[in-house]
Length: 227
Image (cartoon, rainbow, N blue to C red):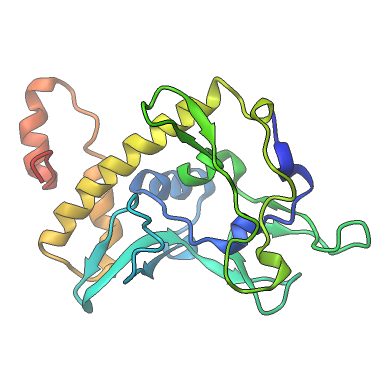
């Protein structure tokens, strides 16, 4: 499978960005990786909308009712680049003379979030074709070299033409569904400690025995298209 510039990269994208995750991402990582929610996820304050980027939903919680949060992967301190942070799932390798920034890999690559799967791609304006982002040189204003991004531009032949559109379509669907989840939660914001159980209630009721039961299921989990 094509890997592009990632193969020998220090993973600047996994260091620079707060990665928004969906409820589907949360439950998949829990189930497949055996990790508890609070080990890998957090609520990231986003008063200016820089994390959500008009794509991820904002959630509100009763301890800070006026602060919008995005559900994201946690960041931990970097060992190879002191004073910087990285995704908690990023596995770092030592800095060498050949690789002065080191190299790194995703520790849950098979179960990585949808936002990570679709990077650096997006749909074109008609939603019919996959196009590559123009990845900037840096992911943060911080001048630390750890926050530089792709070592070279991506090429179209480095993206799987069958898998990429599927990943984007699933990511779009799940993020739209998660926005409906946010609307349902934000009607009566509760403590962050109750959030995971709320997610489980909704996502475990997404598969119905028949279409005739859809109204009852929607009512039970408190989410609807009208939300």
